[in-house]
Amino acid sequence: MPIRLIVDDPSRMVVGVATGTLTLEELIDFLREFLAAAKSGYRKIIDFSACEPVFDADGLAELVKLRSQLRPDGPSGPLALVIGDHQSSLGKAFADLTSDDRPASVFRSIHEARRWIADHSATEKLRR
Image (cartoon, rainbow, N blue to C red):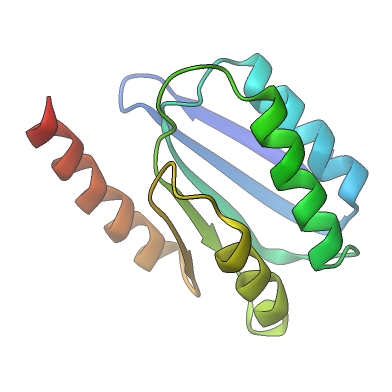
């Protein structure tokens, strides 16, 4: 699978790193694998910067719709999407389609995404 999933249970963090060509079917398989792992409440960073997605905004909308159908009850953790310079249309589509049920944002570097996720982690601890 072109997306490697790294789960860190002690820090409640999931990192997905995509490489090579990424099809919508592979992304849907990744979503199913992730949901089966029951980690929806974890903070998430998905790094697409080193892959070449071969789907468009309509495909991404299909994925978002499927996520809402399959999503377990309970809160979803924040999601940071890292994209490369050649993927600005993917970033815009993600920003347009992301629902309001959790914080989500698009970044150009993994470092920015990690800082943002850390800030949201501090905010979550204050809410508890």
